[in-house]
Image (cartoon, rainbow, N blue to C red; front, top):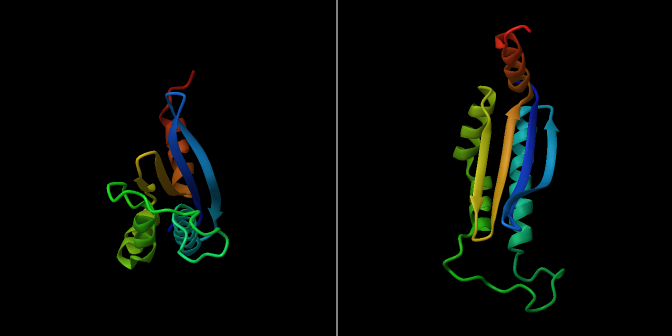
Amino acid sequence: MHDEFLCHVTAYGMCGGQRVGVPLGTYRAPTLALALWWMRDRALWIAERLDPRPGNPTFPPNAVVPVAHTVPDVPGLLRAWSADSGQQDLVAEELAAGNLVRIATNDDTTEYELLAESVDAVRMQRIAQRIAAPAA
Protein backbone atom coordinates (compact mmCIF):
# COMPACT_ATOMS: atom_id res chain seq x y z
CA MET A 1 0.00 0.00 0.00
CA HIS A 2 1.24 3.47 -0.86
CA ASP A 3 0.99 5.81 2.10
CA GLU A 4 1.72 9.28 0.77
CA PHE A 5 0.67 11.06 -2.43
CA LEU A 6 1.82 14.15 -4.28
CA CYS A 7 -1.01 16.02 -6.01
CA HIS A 8 -0.77 18.89 -8.50
CA VAL A 9 -3.22 21.12 -10.36
CA THR A 10 -1.99 23.01 -13.42
CA ALA A 11 -3.57 25.13 -16.15
CA TYR A 12 -1.92 25.11 -19.59
CA GLY A 13 -2.38 27.68 -22.31
CA MET A 14 -0.56 29.37 -25.15
CA CYS A 15 1.53 32.50 -24.57
CA GLY A 16 3.78 33.97 -27.23
CA GLY A 17 3.37 30.86 -29.36
CA GLN A 18 4.53 28.52 -26.58
CA ARG A 19 2.59 26.19 -24.31
CA VAL A 20 2.87 27.52 -20.76
CA GLY A 21 1.84 25.80 -17.54
CA VAL A 22 0.58 27.77 -14.58
CA PRO A 23 0.64 25.86 -11.28
CA LEU A 24 -2.65 26.24 -9.42
CA GLY A 25 -1.71 24.20 -6.38
CA THR A 26 0.23 21.31 -4.91
CA TYR A 27 -0.57 19.11 -1.94
CA ARG A 28 1.37 16.31 -0.30
CA ALA A 29 -1.42 14.09 0.99
CA PRO A 30 -0.56 11.83 3.92
CA THR A 31 -3.33 9.36 2.98
CA LEU A 32 -5.15 8.11 -0.09
CA ALA A 33 -8.44 9.50 1.22
CA LEU A 34 -6.94 12.99 1.56
CA ALA A 35 -5.41 12.80 -1.93
CA LEU A 36 -8.84 12.01 -3.38
CA TRP A 37 -10.51 14.71 -1.29
CA TRP A 38 -7.96 17.32 -2.44
CA MET A 39 -8.35 16.40 -6.12
CA ARG A 40 -12.15 16.64 -5.87
CA ASP A 41 -11.88 19.91 -3.96
CA ARG A 42 -9.53 21.43 -6.56
CA ALA A 43 -11.75 20.28 -9.42
CA LEU A 44 -14.70 22.03 -7.79
CA TRP A 45 -12.53 25.08 -7.02
CA ILE A 46 -11.65 25.42 -10.73
CA ALA A 47 -15.27 24.83 -11.77
CA GLU A 48 -16.56 27.52 -9.44
CA ARG A 49 -14.06 30.05 -10.78
CA LEU A 50 -14.84 29.26 -14.40
CA ASP A 51 -18.59 29.08 -13.92
CA PRO A 52 -19.85 30.68 -10.70
CA ARG A 53 -23.31 29.70 -9.63
CA PRO A 54 -26.02 32.20 -10.69
CA GLY A 55 -26.98 34.64 -8.01
CA ASN A 56 -23.54 34.63 -6.40
CA PRO A 57 -23.43 38.02 -4.61
CA THR A 58 -19.67 38.34 -5.27
CA PHE A 59 -20.33 39.28 -8.90
CA PRO A 60 -22.27 42.35 -10.03
CA PRO A 61 -25.31 41.81 -12.29
CA ASN A 62 -24.41 40.82 -15.88
CA ALA A 63 -20.72 40.34 -15.00
CA VAL A 64 -20.93 36.65 -15.89
CA VAL A 65 -22.32 35.78 -19.31
CA PRO A 66 -22.94 32.40 -20.96
CA VAL A 67 -20.49 31.08 -23.54
CA ALA A 68 -21.44 29.53 -26.87
CA HIS A 69 -22.81 25.99 -26.80
CA THR A 70 -19.85 24.87 -28.93
CA VAL A 71 -17.37 25.59 -26.09
CA PRO A 72 -16.67 22.47 -23.99
CA ASP A 73 -18.25 22.67 -20.54
CA VAL A 74 -15.10 22.32 -18.41
CA PRO A 75 -16.85 23.33 -15.17
CA GLY A 76 -19.62 20.80 -15.81
CA LEU A 77 -17.11 18.04 -16.58
CA LEU A 78 -15.10 18.79 -13.43
CA ARG A 79 -18.23 18.87 -11.28
CA ALA A 80 -19.43 15.59 -12.80
CA TRP A 81 -16.06 13.92 -12.24
CA SER A 82 -16.02 15.09 -8.61
CA ALA A 83 -19.49 13.66 -7.97
CA ASP A 84 -18.92 10.31 -9.74
CA SER A 85 -18.15 7.68 -7.10
CA GLY A 86 -17.22 5.16 -9.81
CA GLN A 87 -14.54 7.51 -11.14
CA GLN A 88 -13.30 8.15 -7.61
CA ASP A 89 -13.00 4.39 -7.02
CA LEU A 90 -10.96 4.02 -10.24
CA VAL A 91 -8.61 6.82 -9.21
CA ALA A 92 -8.23 5.27 -5.76
CA GLU A 93 -7.38 1.87 -7.26
CA GLU A 94 -4.78 3.36 -9.61
CA LEU A 95 -3.13 5.39 -6.86
CA ALA A 96 -3.14 2.44 -4.47
CA ALA A 97 -1.40 0.40 -7.18
CA GLY A 98 1.33 3.06 -7.41
CA ASN A 99 0.24 4.47 -10.78
CA LEU A 100 0.23 8.10 -11.82
CA VAL A 101 -3.30 9.46 -12.25
CA ARG A 102 -4.02 12.31 -14.66
CA ILE A 103 -7.43 13.94 -15.00
CA ALA A 104 -7.50 16.55 -17.77
CA THR A 105 -10.10 18.55 -19.61
CA ASN A 106 -9.92 21.60 -21.81
CA ASP A 107 -11.91 24.39 -23.39
CA ASP A 108 -10.91 26.41 -26.45
CA THR A 109 -8.06 28.26 -24.67
CA THR A 110 -6.90 26.27 -21.65
CA GLU A 111 -6.23 22.71 -20.50
CA TYR A 112 -6.82 21.94 -16.82
CA GLU A 113 -4.88 19.03 -15.34
CA LEU A 114 -5.11 17.26 -12.01
CA LEU A 115 -2.23 14.87 -11.27
CA ALA A 116 -1.61 12.55 -8.36
CA GLU A 117 1.08 9.98 -7.73
CA SER A 118 2.44 7.90 -4.93
CA VAL A 119 5.52 9.37 -3.28
CA ASP A 120 6.71 5.78 -2.69
CA ALA A 121 6.32 4.91 -6.38
CA VAL A 122 8.36 7.96 -7.41
CA ARG A 123 11.10 6.99 -4.94
CA MET A 124 11.13 3.42 -6.21
CA GLN A 125 11.44 4.62 -9.83
CA ARG A 126 14.38 6.86 -8.95
CA ILE A 127 16.14 4.04 -7.12
CA ALA A 128 15.52 1.64 -10.00
CA GLN A 129 17.00 4.17 -12.44
CA ARG A 130 20.12 4.53 -10.30
CA ILE A 131 20.53 0.77 -10.00
CA ALA A 132 20.09 0.32 -13.75
CA ALA A 133 22.55 3.12 -14.61
CA PRO A 134 26.07 1.87 -15.40
CA ALA A 135 28.76 2.83 -12.90
CA ALA A 136 31.22 5.41 -14.19
